[in-house]
Image 1 (spheres, rainbow, N blue to C red):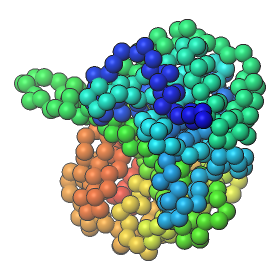
Image 2: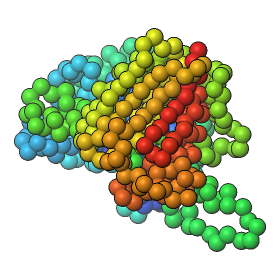
Image 3: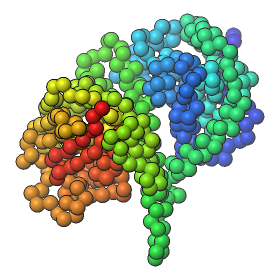
Image 4: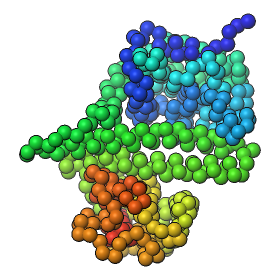
Length: 471
């Protein structure tokens, strides 16, 4: 009897002739996440990435929405995932032999014990072909990345053989997807591009043990210490966002099932919402840290032109429509904390100059920043109205007496513009010791809005206003 094809054979194919590893598991996991970032943010962009395939184990490795929307995926996941609801029915879409449901980001198949649990990923587009895996014993772990066509062709052959054994329909679909790609362009310089990018990414997310604070000598600049803080902050935001994105993919896969009990669906939707909210929050923190690391003068406002700070291209944006589209999401988020939303938009408002993609996330962060300290039962009023040659977007609290702002703010709080209960945590974050929540500092929030063409003002934490230039 022919022995079934295990994914361990695919991993062995990728690791053939690769030197033994010398790292521990924590180190190679950090390398894995950095490699995924380089792959999705640097290599799989531009022409040639509109169509392709990806195959992963034991969980989805890709998290970039654009890639998940355009590429066809197959994921071998552990059987234990199927018992999430306490029953053995499959909870992820497209089990072996089934066609995918509408909009499914990947096909799900069962992982066998012999397959191993180390991460494995193959991505094939017309412009980029790459295979990644982790491998090795506890004291000799390694990240393996292969671009050679002969190696990847052999690995794909093994995967096709595995699919043919357990899911013939999916094997045929894989073959068709590869045919539709046509001739593949293998860039011989791809590996030379990848490794320096990976080194840069790892340098930016170095382990915290390498960022020990050093005593400052008399007259010594604090820029190096601040740079270390920002590097650590960028590393933490990356480490949080990436697994959250994977969790969200799995949750949305579960939500596509039609036989989920109502209470389970409700809980999964809540988890999805929380994941999205935190991904956006940490995305803003990451962007704010990046802006702080730019040279002085590299960022600034440009309220009348077509270019924001940091080289951001601004475009005509219908802020009225954007707010109406986001109102439902914000209402659900606020409702989880017992808050209400009132939306007041003046009629016939002109478009503004901004970056609509980032503005949506930034407005969500502003809503979160404003509402976190409000007492349950409060109402957040969001008003948009004309103000001369600009539009004024104002967030206010109709129940100001219930806010956490003391009646007599301290001098330090008045000078910084923060709510008096907030304390600065470096140049990017502020901390509310009453609620235990972290937020972007007022300075960082203003800097981000300047990049989007706006100007933020804050009064005591109970009134936030952003002015946008009109077209």
